[in-house]
Image 1: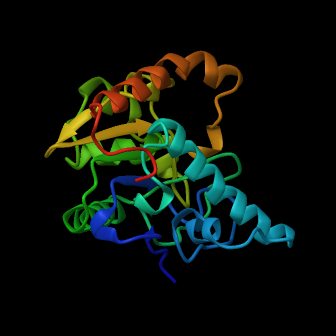
Image 2: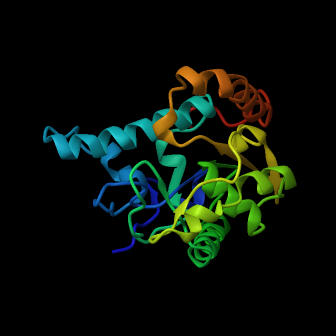
Amino acid sequence: MRTKFFCAGDLREARVLVIGHDPRLQRSDTQSQYAFFADYYFRPIPTQRSELQKYKLAQAVFSYVAYLISSRYSPDKLVLTNLCNTALPHAPKRKTVLIPQQEARAGISAIRDILHQSSVEVVFAMSLQVNYWLQKLGFYPPVPEFLRAAEPAPRGLKHEPPYYEARRGRAFQLICGKCFNVDGRRVIPILHVKNWPLRGVFKKAYAQAYEDCVNDVNSLYTPGSQQPGA
């Protein structure tokens, strides 16, 4: 089963695209029907623990994006997908599965189809590896220093199955929260939802980037334009 993108409303009217990682980021064997289990957000809150965890992930993503866009759009104006929607072999414990380049290319093609069918204005791309592939494969303008730092380390590539580990630490701090212009849209790299709200070392490293990001997104709109929740 391939994970599908999700939009609760009319895709043609979607204003925000969220790009995640893959259906089984680390150890879970569960593969969602829709990215981030986003459909659970629009259902009654589950009582069964396993189902509740899926709801909480969906809720966290929608809350995360609401913060970033200052609740400008209602949840049905969001479309959510992954760069990779195929279940991949598990990485070693505490490591992140490597998205193969061919899967990343296929994911970018699918993302471009979504953008072609929608009215998306802002794209939030989660996680270090996702943004590495999006830059490496030309989805948005590359930052050479970031690409060098975020390149997959040889020891991860040699492992069976391979896993993703950046060549250098702190690579994501070079781009997180910055706005990149692509065909009249803004593409903004952000941390994975599991790292939100910011705490501890993440708060110290990224708080200013997030403040700048929210200000940049707000600057896209002028008084009298699309109102929050519209």
